[in-house]
Structures are given as C-alpha cells and as structure tokens.
Image (cartoon, rainbow, N blue to C red; front, top):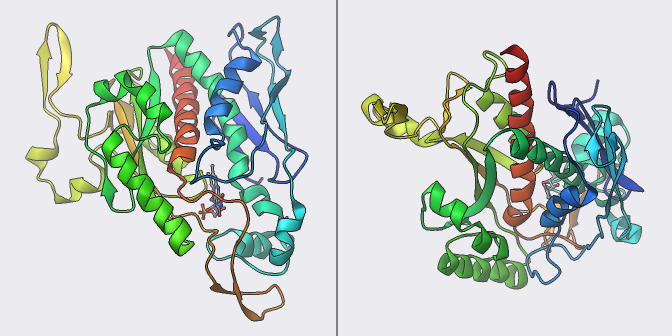
Length: 364
Ligand SMILES: Cc1cc2nc3c(=O)[nH]c(=O)nc-3n(C[C@H](O)[C@H](O)[C@H](O)COP(=O)(O)O)c2cc1C
C-alpha cells in the first residue's frame, strides 16, 4: 500500500492535503500511562509555524490548533490509537488557478499526475510542506515518551545558508544556548553570521525574486545505547529514511559523513579508552552509530535543504496538454526552508529514536 505509515512499534500514519479540511495523524503503539495534554503537542506545532514577523517565511498563517480525538483518558495515554487533528482555515483556492493546467518546476506536480492520473493542485496537495504538521504532532508524543523514559534531548540549528557558514560549536554549548537559537529568525546560534545570512536571503528574495538552500544540523543528545536493528533497520538507515522523507531534503550525512571519503582510517576510526570506569570515545566521527547500533555518544545528522521551488521568476515548463510555456510561481511561500524544517526534522528523529527504544525494550 501507499507509503503514509512510518515506524514499527511506534507507528504513525499521516493524512491530509494542503487545502483539505484538516491535517492529522494516527499513532498506533504508543505505550499506556504517558501523561499527554493538547498543550504538549501545541508547543511543538507552534515551533513549526512561520513567524508572523518573518520576512523569509510564507504569509500563509494557520492557527494550527491541535485537538486530540482519541487514545487519551484523564490526561494519560491508554495504549489505544491516538488521533490528533488540526483544521486548515487559511485557504485561498484562487491562488492556484494558473497551475491547474501547468506543472511547476521543482515541485511534485508532474510526478503526482504521472503516478496517480489525478492531482490535487491546491498548494501542492499531499506534497505540501503542510503534511509535516502531522509529523510534528506525532513527534511531540514521541518526545514525551523520551522525556519520561530516557535522558535523550533532540535539537536542531542552521549551520549554513547558501555558502555562508556559521561558526562551529560543541554540542554541549549548542544545548545550553538553545534559547538563543529558538529566538533567532533562522534558528542559527552564531548571531553575527545569522544577520549576514538573513541579509543574503532578503537580497535574493526581494531583488532577484529567487530562493536559497541551506544546511541544518540535528543533534540527538544522550541517546540510549544499543538502539538499531541490523541489518535493514540500522539506526542510521532509519534516521536517513525519516529525514529524506521530508520535502525539500536532498542530502543526509551522519557524523563525519561525506568527509570520511577524504580521511585515512587512522583519522576516521574513533579510538576508545576506559576513564573513571566508563567507556569513552576519543572522537565521534561515526556520529554515535557503529554497525547500525547507537554507541551512546551524540548522534549528529546534517541535512541539505534545497532552495524553495516556488520563486518569482519566469521558468520554462509544460502544460498538462503538452504545450511549452513559461511560469512564474507567485503566491505565499517560504524563501529559505531551514528554520521551518528544523522542528520537523527534530520530531522525525524523536519518532525514530522512540520506535527503536520500544523495539529494544521489547527484546531485553
Ligand atoms: C515545512 C515545509 C515548508 C515548505 N514550504 C514551501 C513553500 O512555501 N513553497 C514551496 O515552493 N515549497 C515549499 N516546501 C517544499 C516543497 O514541499 C517540496 O520541495 C516539493 O513538494 C517537492 O518535493 P521534493 O523537494 O522533496 O522533491 C516546503 C517543505 C517543507 C518541509
């Protein structure tokens, strides 16, 4: 069947289109007796919303008010399916008349029609970034489980916009300064560079009518040791799948990633020692995963995010009846997706870690 379900024990199914009545998720396999309130989910969902003051985000503002429909009784999960929903309200169907009969370059319009023989052209339908709202709802529940049962924390930040790179910080420093990152329009910890990035994005958007790509980093701090099911459900394989399933994510690397191609074994291998009776790794080039199983060190993932496809520039495309035309994708769009994808990627990471944590506790 079609791929709208993700996870093995903590299993989520998302549903909904950009301009449909509502967007939602069904979570099957959530353990019972986890305290859960709508406000726990709302907090995460609000982090995904475009800031109303942002000059680089879409001007589509949705209330995104979440409602738990099932699976929670007297403030605790019951072990039955949890259904969570948010209504879509800020709908402008007239914005999409031009693309009813044309395929937008960089979008999923052509491939959806090719595959299904029908396409919901309103705001990209199911391929819209709006679908990620449902993942964030599920991730908020996963984060509650992790909070209760592990010491794991998950957080993300922007490390590059175009070719402008942020200063490198160690993961403890990043975690301690998450307050600064959360307040930053780009979710970048390096405040000086963030201003440069923002200026660059605004120039590209307002002077050129164009958009820019970015790199974000997701850090999973204190993950449980021993997570991952070799061979096909290795932890890195599942994390990569979770990340690549987010729209506009075009590359994933874990630990030293693509740099390992330039390294010698003696540089890349993370040497080990016993210190204070505990196992210590001298480096973390493997990004906290060896043989598909977590070492307990930080899991560090970087995602390459493509420039937003909708831009105010004429580009060549074709119509549904096979004519060559030019199209300018006006409308309400983000210009750099990094700050919006961070909460989505954090929550997808939470879903994967929770799923593997439940799988691990079921065998030991
Ligand atoms: C949270 C989020 C918001 C997005 N917002 C926009 C947007 O405003 N405009 C746009 O053109 N694409 C946006 N996208 C990207 C498109 O959905 C995506 O590029 C498109 O569906 C094609 O899929 P692909 O890039 O994964 O191949 C967004 C994606 C996400 C995850």
